[in-house]
Length: 260
Image (cartoon, rainbow, N blue to C red):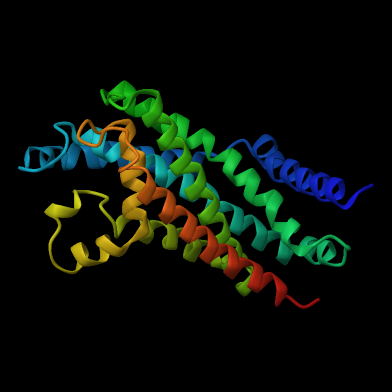
């Protein structure tokens, strides 16, 4: 068997193993789906009049907040990959994998790909709930594609972040820290209002937060004031690429430092 075929087979096996949790644990996808939906319902009802502010790019606050909830659900799905890795480390399963001749990077590739696959479920469910509530797809097919690319790619970044912490802490107790990291990254951006309407330190932080530009890319699906265009897409792609390089390097660095 060639090295390429071996690598592909190992990654596929790890991918299937990670997805088996969805089949065996019926409620595995509930936290990543229900929590963002609750947030969507509560925020849209509580702050719905913010769209009346001058300069807000849409008359529907639901349309503004819906991509945020999709990104949140995908990010939580990615964070769960890190928590699952911590469980495997505690149970000794991951140490057995480290003794195999497989390149260590492949031991992360399967679970990360599985997290990206699982992210399709909360993203689709949350988007469907938003559409039922009255949010429209002003961006058409191009906008929907941008939303899914942003959500699934963000899931991968969250999975790399979670894996880094899991490899560092080697305990499931790191789970809340993984999820809080995803939570803060999302909400210290243009989560509630556009950048021109933010003030103080949050405006400065959101301007340099890469998630701000990922959200702009995702909002092409539902926000009429952000129509699908390359100008609204390339900053998000650059932000996603930069975060992938950063957290990918951190995860691989931590993986190389693991000693049996």
